[in-house]
Image (cartoon, rainbow, N blue to C red; front, side, top):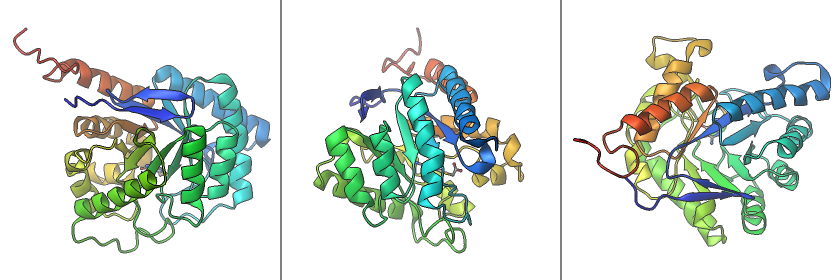
Length: 295
Ligand code: 7PJ
């Protein structure tokens, strides 16, 4: 049981990471919502967001740029039109921190201006200008930054990923990103790190990395883990189709929490909440730092 339970500052919100928290995924890519125009799209997103918060999501991650392997890049203007109205509407109604899942510095800037409290970059703030925008937003507006590891880019990353030691290499990358952020004046309490499951990794790499989570967590910085509905879940369950991966995803989220992850990025919030609640109630130390065995 860690004694130094971190608190994550995200814009105006403070999230106590003493117990694992759920980040609900809100995709606003065209395939994920109705085609009834912008108003309908924002309404759909609000409905989904309200449901996730009611089910126990404590952060929402809004993404308008598909990063599925092989996905084509999305133009800034399209991403802007999908994401910004949704963040504004959520901001006005819901009292949870809002994260924006983007690799583009201009999107980061504009999302923060309309109320995003976290920048989540699968590219680890490596695009030209991204680090400067992210660090500025962190220093000036107190937003949190989540830096993820990816080998290659979304177009090509699954072609031939290679590592000598995936855990060591991912850890070295994340440590280098943290060092850079700290050097740029970002407070420690605003940084999350993510090993990036499925991003330039084979099944074997993903499994090795998952098994290495306790080693990564030992670095001391809070980990965010996203495996929800990913191909590794399907592959480990006899090629289970995406629509049937939620139970497996909840179990994997639980295992990640057990291995030290502080934030779980998921689609099925209620199943994950139940898994985490049972973990907290039934773990040997009672989840409160007390060893209750024998009581
Ligand atoms: C992740 C993400 C992830 C973080 C996506 C998908 C692909 N952001 N954005 N971590 N994955 N931080 O959800 O399947 O694993 S998009």
